[in-house]
Length: 496
Ligand code: N01
Image 1 (cartoon, helix red, strand yellow):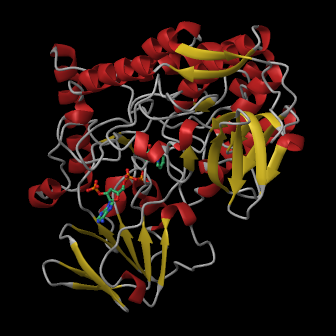
Image 2 (cartoon, protein in one colour):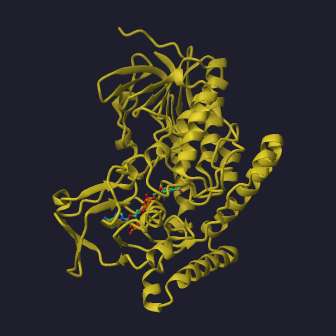
Image 3 (cartoon, helix red, strand yellow):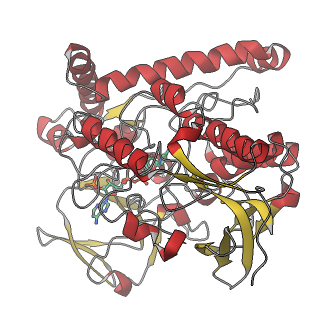
C-alpha cells in the first residue's frame, strides 16, 4: 500500500518520482514494465535515433546536463542522462521493474486505486500518476500476408540489433520522424534499400553541432549560462508555434518559408523535377510533425536506395508487392510506422468510480482538464495526457508544468485533510469544448491524417496554444475545479 503509484519510468515517471520526494512523500512506487528506466529512450534504439528538440531544452530544468555532446545527442546519451537522474535522486529503491500494469481500478469501498499487473500482482495506492507516454505502443500495419514474410520483420521501436544489414535487401515502411533518422544511418551498409513512402514529409535543416569542450567547461563552471542557452532554445521553438496556430500574415509567411526550405533541400539532391515532385508534400507544413534532417534526401538519392511511392498491396515470403503490380524482393522489412497515440487510455484498462471504464468515458473524445485529470476518476493524474501533445516544443517542459500542478494538488490534500479529489464534470466539459474550438483553427485540423487525429477526424491529442500559455494556466492547482472528500490522504480504508 503506497500513497502514490507512478506508472512508467520515462521522463514523466522519473519526474513524478522527483516531485514526490520534493513533496516529502516517501511512500511511492514507480511501476515499470521493463527491466530498466528510460521509456521511449530505452525502447527506441534504432540506428540514428536522436531527439528532434535540442537536449539542452529536452531535459529536466532541475537536472541540467552540461555534458551534452552536441545540440541533438543520440539516443544512448539521453538514456544515460535518465539513468543518471535516477541515480542522483536515489529513485531505484522506489522502482518495481517487471511490473507490467494491465488494470488500474478505483475501489469505491476503500477509496483507493488497485493496480494489477499482467502477472496478477496488485498494488494499492491512494493516488495514481500515469506516465505511460503517448509514444509507447508501436503501431503495426496489417498488410495482407505480413506474417508470411520469410525474412526478418520488426518495428523501428523494437530494433533487432542481431539482424545483419550488410549487403542485404532492406525495406523500410514509412517516412516519418523515425524513418528519416534510420534510413540515412543504414543506407550505406545495405545492399539495396527500398523506402516505401505513403506521404512525403516537410523537412527542415537540422542545426546540429558538436559541443566544444570549452563550452561544456563553461556550463559546468557557470550553470546560469546554460540556463540562458536553454531559454534561448525555448523561445526559438516557441516562435515556431506561430506557423501552426493561426492563419494570419505571420503564419502564412512562416509556412511559405518552411516550404521553400524543404524545396531547397530536395533540389540539392534531386535535380530532376519529376523525382523532386514525388518528394514534395501536399499538406500544410506542421499538420504532420515537421521533421528535421540534413541527410534524408541525400540518403534517398544514393544509387542503392529507391523511393517507392505506390502503396503496399501485400507481403509474401520474399517481399512486398505494391499496387502498381511490382514485386520488391527483400531480406528484411522494417516498419517505421509510428505509434498508436489516439488509442487512449491504451495500453492500460482504467476503471473509475462506480465501475466506469475510461475507454468508454473517452469514446467520443478524450476530455480532461489540461490533460491531467478526468471526472469520475478521483486521485488520478496523467502526464503528457490527451490534449497536451506538441508539434513545436519540448514535451519535457509540458511534463514539468503538469508535475507542478500535481505537486500542489498533493500538498493541498495533505495539508487540508482531503482524501480524494475529483474533477468537476462541468469543468471537464468546458475544458474539452475550448480545446476542440481552438484546435479547429490550427494546422493540425487542416485535413491531413496524422497521429494527432483520431479515426473520426477529432483532434484531441495536441495542445492548441503556446507552451507559455499552458504554463500560465496549468501550473497552479485550483481547488474550485474539484470535488473533494475529507479524510487523511494516504490512509486506505481496510477491506470489509
Ligand atoms: O511515426 P509517424 P514515427 N502503409 O507516425 C507511415 C516522435 N519521434 O515513429 O504519413 C504505409 O510520424 C506513415 O505514412 P503517412 C515524434 O513525435 C520523435 O516516425 O501516415 N505507410 C508515416 O510516414 C513523431 O511524430 C523523434 O501516410 C504507413 C510513418 O509510417 C512520433 O514519434 C524521433 C502505414 C509513420 O510516421 C512518431 O514518429 C522519432 C501503412 N499502413 C519519433 N502506416 C525525436 O526525434 C504508417 N505509415 C524526438
